[in-house]
Length: 389
Image (cartoon, rainbow, N blue to C red; front, top):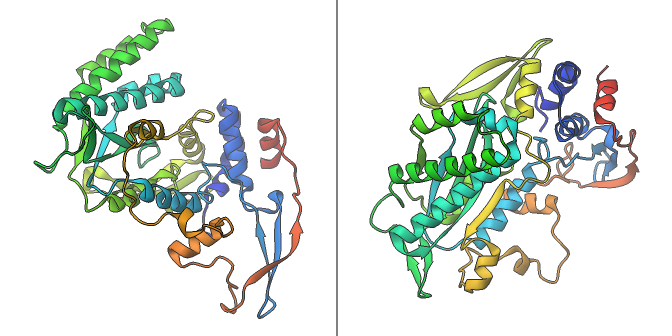
């Protein structure tokens, strides 16, 4: 359902000014370009007619960009469906690793390096705690988020950790059975802090940039780091579906945008310092887009990763007997055609995107394909400027 205001409207209103004041990377420019043209005649589409009442309608193609809020619903549903089938039928814990804001300057200097070290420190921390506390190779499904509720830079990684592992003697072992938490939070925080800062210093020293960021490093050493650990939830499926709400989500959804004026953008944000109450936040339009661009990841950077027993190579070598949550999609659709995203949405949510919006009885049938109005252009900044004039 189209909301009153969309991210595409903000790009159209303030994109030109942003390009005049900020130097965007090619991936950032392309993301804004795709978002602006998503589901418009520029990308082509289809003319449809209802086979019952004859209503004529038009549907335009999606851009498919992973930062477009209109293109993530089907991907989110598909990811949740896929992961639920592959998770172990054991308790899972939700652990969140956060980075102090004093290191944001280093993140802005080289985000790809920073996020890579972030993932690596999380992996090594969980790996060491699995062996030191339970003597097992455990695992995790890790998802990177880079934003806070007000679109500020706030890197953090959500981890889904199973309460089970594979010991060195080749036996399967259940862990975390003695309390509500899998690992001691304070120990987890200190270990993660040490591993991340040590690897960050080594990397900066190799590139001769340690002196430039020495102040931020020292401040981070003096700051108390926090790793959030929550008690185990009802089931693996419950944890996966909870985190699945955020996996394919972009920094802001269209539903959160309240108003767009000639100069300002107002949107809803949760204030976690006030019991997560939802409050309106107003930003300058250019500042809003600048913050949004902070969360466009490096080219081909993978933001969902699998560690330990959930890594596909580890599973092959250990030959684990994974117990599926339910029958897999492949088993259900064996011998049939490949399930489309529209069919997946209907099966899981009951919403039929092909249903006629007028009579609610007929099915919308494609009768004509609509060609693109404008072909892609490699000169994204100039093209975007010309479109926004």
